[in-house]
Amino acid sequence: MERTTTSDPRTLADRALFVRLETLRLTRIAGAGHYSGTFSAAELFAALYYHQLRIDPARPGWPDRDRFVLSKGHAAIGLYPVLADLGYFDPALLDSYTRLGSPFGDHPDMRKVPGIDFSSGSLGHGLSIGVGMALGGRVQGRDFRVYVMVGDGELAEGQIWEAAMAASHFRLGSLVCIVDRNQLCIDGRTEDVMAVEPIGDRFAAFGWQVRRIDGHDLGAIVAAFDGLAPADSGVPQLIIADTVKGKGVRRMELDVNWHVGNLGPEDYEAVRAELMAGAAR
Amino acid sequence: MTREAASKELPSKGAAGGSDEQSDLFRGVSQSAAPAKAGTVKGITTKSIPAFVAGEELADLADTDARIVAMTADLASANRLADFGTRHPARFFDLGIAEKNMITVAAGLAATGLMPFAGTFASFAALLGFEQIRTDCAYPGMPVRILAHHAGMSMGFYGTSHHALEDLAAMRAVAGLTVACAADANQLRAMLRASLGVPGAIYLRLGRGRDPEVYPVVPADLQFGQAVELRAGTDATIITTGSQVHPSLAAATALAADGYQVRVVDMHTIKPLDVGSILAAASETGGIVTVEEHNVIGGLGSAVAEVLADHRLAVPLRRHGVNDEYVLVGPPAALYAHYRLDPAGIAAVVKEQLLTAS
Image (cartoon, rainbow over all chains, first blue to last red; front, side):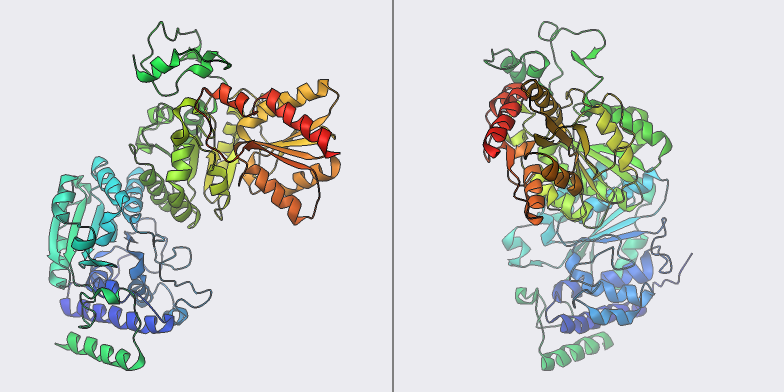
């Protein structure tokens, strides 16, 4: 079943703002949360879910749906509102975010949240899940694509490279990996803590087709998705999205102190206003 | 000559000879080193070799069950999953020497509706791949079946890196995971068949692929979580699992010659545990000896002790296994004798228990 999707940057930008505002709201419920690594991915979430993915929210178990694996599971706080907005579940359920027994934890649980294609949280696993899903599609003769979003700091996990090697070995052209290159991990800049560059050269050497874009430019993101090689190309696809950790909130941008944080009541309103004003520009 | 072949030719003192001396891994066997026998593979009869039948059994099952896929990590020859690959090449994946990736890829395959059977050495599956089994397979309830072969000290002189004497302790602590040990080829076939009806993840612990026959036919009534009483008796009960079932039965036979009637229970499933059979042994026999090719910490013996404690049963219990140490290098049969996990050793342990318990 086809659903309505859009390529309109203004519409997608509005959904990215929605991701950021909901992240603010839900973090307030939890008392702490991953603001900045979610803000860096807001435009990517918007483009994936309102433009790219072949999904049907009425049928979360549809065997032929595209899969999305959020390997950087700590950004789930930005994904839940999107799934609610698309109709996977009642948005009012989000008010239970992180409270005792809630389906919604800091990291996503596929058994509790419709629309989550795989549980995640332990970094470095998601690309292997994607390899398995892509192989599963091939075994069953299904033509879905598998999108995996990894963080840049996550690239230090060895299993990422085991999966990268397997993806090209098995010629998984249906596999798309998106790197949210937001420049920071918890202890500092990735290049100071454990250098991950040159990401593109490294994946290319592993047999991937690589493109690098501004991960906050919705036109560029849509163009990258539209320009993916066909799923039967046999070449796994990498999109390096250059982003800013904390994007949209000046005090958080590229500040390692905001990897996990909580805003007081006054700051909450100020940040909310800043996001609204930024989106209006 | 390979290093392994060279070590094979060293004389071994006190060790059983024969096929036990042969390496599982090298295939470059010269005629003089390993003369072939008719009807055998590498000089070993294939009839009762669990790790050798998994590929064949799964290939048979896959003929009628489209969910089944098989995977390994560069051990397709050692575990004979190559036999599956020959018959179902599009459903067989060799992930190379990357066990963590193999297990997580299995979870991804399972997420699309398939049932992957992933085989590698138990040491690498359970210890290297522990988090992948727990977080990617058991926690989301993926129907992944880990075929953890060459468990315990069955890798012999390959040493501690290749031994798995902690895997049951680790696997038993994983919620939602079925943990079972196959005693021989026929029981393994029964477990593979029964696994098709289990919704969540399974850790199947297998031996070296040379375990002597315990079950003359494939047990049609095998159910995970339901122990099998293989020998009746009331003087004591041996509760054992996997590779230790056969020597425990032999020990019980030897003890019968001395006038002791010892019950032998094959606790093939470590989780979920058959509590009823443990309580029956506690109330009906003179004491319990658990026998396992595993550290005495965390495995079958610990599981039985927990049941007795939970039920406030002050029953004589002896946990027999490896006593919290890294085992010596040596051929497997020599190691089993050294650690009293052969029939004579088990009989001696049970006799000590019988004489001191009353």
